[in-house]
Amino acid sequence: MSILAWIVLGLIAGAIAKAILPGEQGGGWIVTIILGIVGAILGGFIASALFGVNVNESFWSLPTWISAIVGSLIVLVIWGFIRSKAGKRA
Image (tube, rainbow, N blue to C red; front, side, top):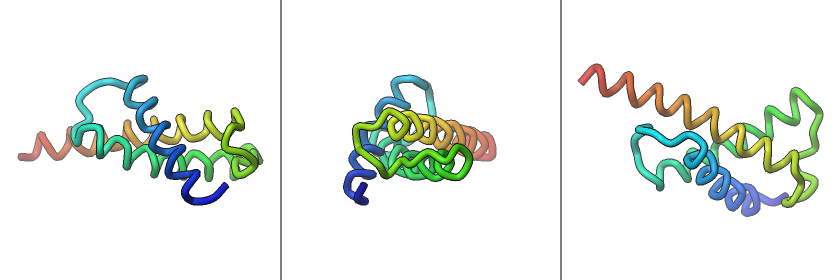
């Protein structure tokens, strides 16, 4: 898959992750979409490294989508922790 496909996948995965994990992560939808792109790339890397899944095979491949959504959830949770710690310091 090209980098453009990963960006589109990240946009969608970020929106799905936000729907799965609603709450106060801070930053709104734009930050969530950016975090989704980062999460999709992270999820693809983790799936390739740990499970040997070829996430670059196809845009419509189920392992690609699952790894992108799980990666987006991981990044969104980490972002929520960072934002909550920063809010407590201020």
